[in-house]
Length: 263
Image (cartoon, rainbow, N blue to C red):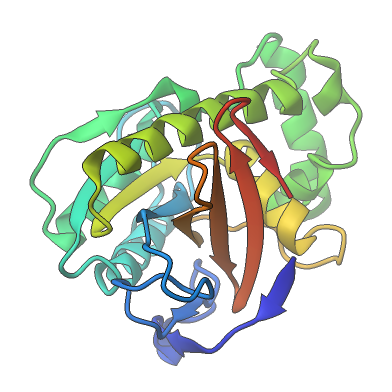
């Protein structure tokens, strides 16, 4: 389910078009459940894609453009986290750790940056074939064409060159399940988790809820933010996810028993 919602601008107009898509987020106070009346908010999480990279695997593995992009992402996130207990989690790869460190500096986060392999990039089984696929689509239209191909090229589902989309979403579901369990344990609606990951991990949410690629819109960009608010359903077995992305709100149900999202 997707609808428009009243938002406020968190990225100045002068910063748009410089690597991070314009994003806006709800004006409603973060201390209150949204849409669900008086339902208590379990917590909030921001997910974002790492900055532009040359894929060297040498820390921080970000281009100068990538560093600038993530700096703007950090400024955007800084306006969301005031008064919240923040935790930063990163994929193990250098480009996500480098991105996480920049955001930590911008928001004044001095705690440990946690590393979680559940939100790592796709496992590569055939590096040569994988790089050939990347170059094939990059030559056609840059990184955005590579991103679009993820939903159209059957090789991404075969499991011969790369980890399948299904397998990636299974481990992302496990990550969400653990995060939600921590929110229940904390019993603190001010908990705010920042997760730095990769296109193939995050794009399922943006595509299944907002049909970005299907509608020929720009795929999830480097540094682009997805905000999720977690709301209980009453039985403890399921949690409502309110997902904010590009001035839209979508909703999904997370089944804690199966660790699966129902869109």
